[in-house]
Image 1 (cartoon, helix red, strand yellow):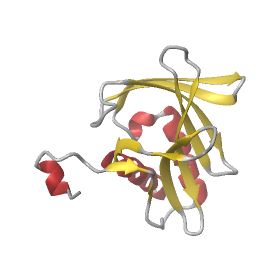
Image 2 (image 1 turned 90 degrees about the vertical axis):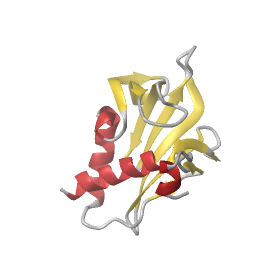
Image 3 (image 1 turned 45 degrees about the horizontal axis):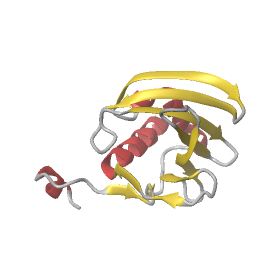
Image 4 (image 1 turned 60 degrees about the vertical axis):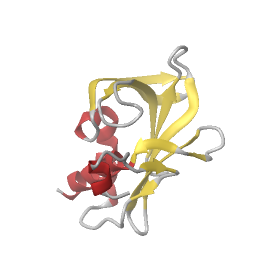
Length: 158
């Protein structure tokens, strides 16, 4: 769907089964990883969110960051509070944002994954099952995803 159809009131395209950036130049893998990790505790620099709270935690699921924030961007999550556990694995080049159950606070089987791909250097975002790693259809607006990835790249290129 084009930007023009979105401007006429059409819904923006969705992330679906994932999005991968074009090959990245002008930034190292180390600089990209560093900026991807900044988003863990400063998501407001990359996403339309407010009221961000983060805590480092060590629990049954291992070392992670607990984070809550209110999403102000377009789409089905507008106005909702997101609570998640975040796990960063530099060796795998993967940051997993595991959604928390609203009523119990336990982890659900849904995670959003930001991956640093190499050869060629790219960033991928997708949603998947924690247990099976099978991708899920992510109903998030694609333009928001692209903006977050592009901001990460721009910051890493500085």
